[in-house]
Image (cartoon, helix red, strand yellow):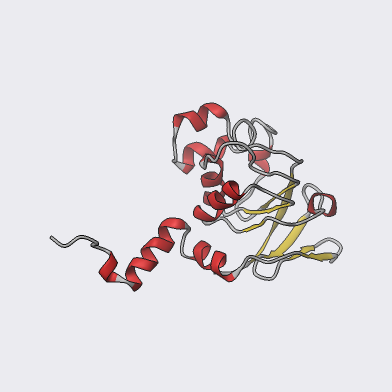
Length: 179
């Protein structure tokens, strides 16, 4: 997997909840997981025009407490389907687990990132090394990169992919109970 991603920064604010901002609450309650249904509703409650501006490979930039609230994954599924990456100042451990489980690349401790980047700005992110570069000015900032274990899980396709890889490596565990 290529850990360097180039795209447009879509800068959000602080305290952006999953339910009611990243994904409409009625969609969360419907429990749909079909990306085709989720993508058009991504961020619609926060900014009705944002979904139309997002292109595959773009980067979501948020302040503190991104994906706050309940640990639902509808918005994360849509972000994964679009190949988005996430940069934020902070997120809860449950939100981080959901992002990694869905195999979305993330830098979740980027202090000041929402002030460094502007909405619509072209950027490059090296998720392995934590380097974020503004392509218009070549200014860059360094943050903690994704740890190798987390990169491996994302590369394997998230939680399900990591489990499948583990079972391929340990076929004796695929059938834990004898017939």
